[in-house]
Image (cartoon, rainbow, N blue to C red; front, side):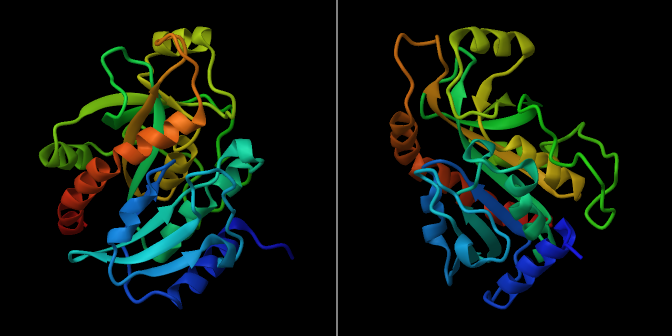
Length: 273
């Protein structure tokens, strides 16, 4: 009999448990070009995604593909250096499988980061923005199909996809703007007409990740905080072409800012669990 998502996630989690020395309750997913935060973890147990049973493998520059588990200060945490995306050929179930595994490890708080295009005109390149909500424009929901009650309920609330409590903690750590993130499937960047339409829909940021991960996290009752790095202004806002190298360069430039924010947040998150 073929293994279901629950069995595969438990098998992957069991593999990881045998190779780590702490039990994390907080997890962080690091987006494009934002992976260096994991270098602060000590002592670190680094596991390549290629070694973890059933784990999908990133194919995009800026996503190194390692799970790093250890502590920063007194906070035990798991950090994903990179993620996979639908445009790499993965299904929604595969894209979100790592979040299922984190839940089986005992994660109760998830921080998701991403590189995003800025739609709202007051945003600037290199700015960090808290996610207040999202719009799923990928055309797929990762919990469609047969539901396994061991993972979560058939129907679940998304009113507070991004925790107000966690956003208040983030605001206490740094002065941050908030915005609505719209997810597309990619890999092409958006057209100016699409960006104009997305702004009309109420989107402040646009990207190719995060939303399906958050849906699955909320399906399992995990509290979520989202942070976007505005790595470029969206199509049509500036009179210039968009390219992935610009995304990577901006991500590298704000690494220290993101690292300082996450490091300041971790003690408060640990106390609140």
